[in-house]
Image (cartoon, rainbow, N blue to C red; front, side, top):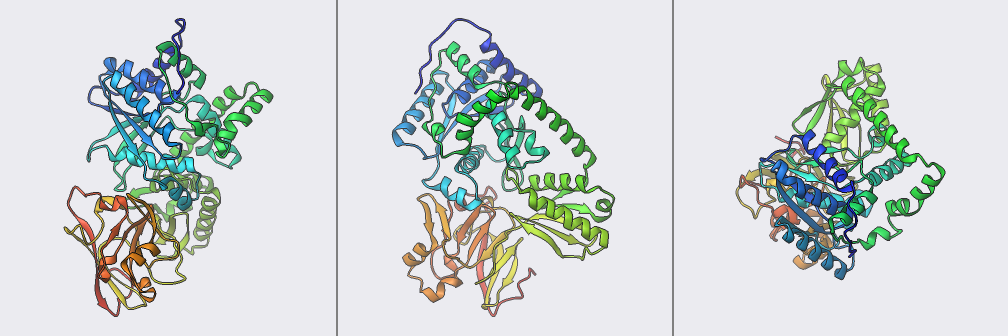
Length: 490
């Protein structure tokens, strides 16, 4: 914990609060709105929480704090941090919700998505925060990203080969949607133009203590190495780098706005996918098609970064097909990274897709209720029902689903942490030669349910798989017959 002392009066407090007030006015917040601050107890979120607390009387909004323990640091440090954030909230009579991620969940998601632990922790943190918002309600999530974070992000993205959308940096606003595509959180970043050192000065003026995260000094994280070493050396070589990055970001914002306008309407959003008219694509330049594809992918997979190589491949293959008239109906043009581009009559469809291999066992894309079968003679009926014991709640997953056989190293995330399916099968005493028949359901976030009930065992669910759906409906799966179907929905 780092203590601060009150110093002499300066203009720093008004500068921080003015940045927040400007953001609130642009957003149009008022007494009917709810702001949730993602509050770690560190200097950035502490300054943001204090400024929004002081502005609350002027704007009249409801203000809450949420603290998430990721379980990635020493227990004593995490406990001290939790005590600090509770004390901060109590002194101001603010609502606070303290949440804890299940052990190993960050590492498991990082492996699953092939990303770093920081990105995995952020995604899980946003999921937890979204879960506290009641169904049908929308809240604003205020994040303490600073000018330092913005500059670091631009440098990292430049060396990662990012395009216009990446090099415009961290957006000031955004939307966080649930699996049903409904907006749950509207993201605000009021401090993107403020350097961290000004926030610390603000806290000193306010006499507010803040916690220090020991992991921010660890060299195992790329951003830490950039922040603690590389950015300082770049600033020495290029003294005006900060202002130059701001100007570059502004130019990319203007360019992105132009491309958004020129490509507007090229892809239309429909239930579960994006659609583009083939004739419209034929009349469009490849650069605009690429930009429209990137935007469409962002709507299908919010928060995910798709490699440029895949976007470029989509653009090239699509251009070849359009030029040569080879867009056969129902043909898959290209797929990867959880998405698929296919031709359908006079349109092309961009959709989410679970791209799992089929070397062994069975695999079906489940787009809704129906009958499905496989070469092993297993038949399945997928239907909606009111029985929570037969399958996962509708609120716990998003289509498309995969109904497939188990594979080596499959894990199920639950309240007790990740568990190998092989261990679950041993607990059930499932014979080795019968394990391939036990089905599981998986969506883009991982395994939702192991359908043991089909073979006389008890279903096992991921933690999110048992979240009740407000409609009271569940996805029920049962063995329909031996002999199988043709693998298509009827």
